[in-house]
Amino acid sequence: MSKPSTSGRWTGFFRRLRIFGLCLAVSALVLSVTPIGRQMYALACYELGFNDRREETELLEVHVIDVGKADAILIRSGGRAALIDAGKPDAADTVADYLLRHSVTAIDYLIMSHPDSDHIGGMPGVLGEIDAGAFVRADTRYSEGGSSFRALADTLKRKGIETMALEPGGSFTLGQAVFTALGPVDSFEDPNNSSLVLRMDCGGFSALFCGDMEYEAEQALILSGQDVDVDLLKVGHHGSNTSSSMQFLWEVSPEYAAVSTALDRNLLPKDEVLERLENVGAQIYRTDTDGNIVFIYDGNNVRVRLDKEERTDYETVEHRPF
Image 1 (cartoon, one colour):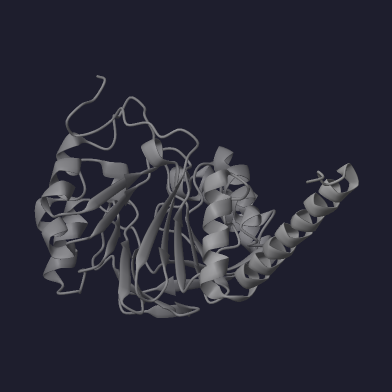
Image 2: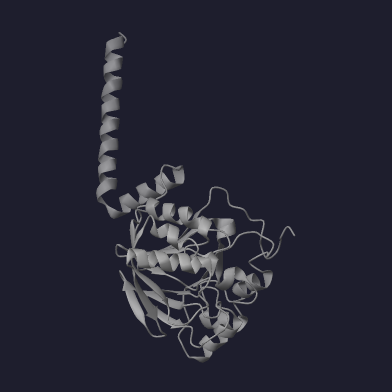
């Protein structure tokens, strides 16, 4: 029997190569037009490091941005966006870049929990890159003489941004999400206790954002009878032991807890707080060990995406290096 010629073998090889290419093209077409295909493709690309799904938008996204021991939280729903706090002044570029990388060029609401520099210091810089429709704050009086607040007030005035002062019971919508102010329910001398407390509800998912609220305001909020039972808690005051009392956490009973912090001389979050969160069954996520934390709700399920190149587990309840 004669062997096939070299040209014949090459012809067969290229034919098989064309068939393989056609199969790939058909597979790519299927992936591009079916929801499950797009989801599988995006997941594969993310896991292989080709992209980080920054265009991913479900019913609701809550991004706890890693800005050190400070707060900056991006919330997206229905093509709308809000930003709660913006970190310290030197975090402005980090926050603005994060928003722009996620295709957020404008936010509907810029929300101040309270006027401490580690919450509003980055706002003027962010507003230099990102447009805002309205500025939201608690309807309470603060000692507003700090340089960070003055810089923010000047920026808001210069850009003509409307201010919304929310009393308990006041609300606004963002896409499919509804935000309701629960506190502060009283007047407090400490600006931490005067933090704006916001409850967010979106379908069957809920969250509580309470700035740096401490024990005194937590007790007042519980006594007010407000509904604080939610799925996600942004842990108050970066995990300080002056916040997150056991009674408050039992009332909130969060399934997820997010702590925005960094390793420094204050050693936050405190072991006592982590233990209390564990005792109420919360899954704990932290920017110091997890980087940016994204909670994605599709109307049925919640996914948690952690965005840090190298996860560090040096700080746990069982073992700490100090």
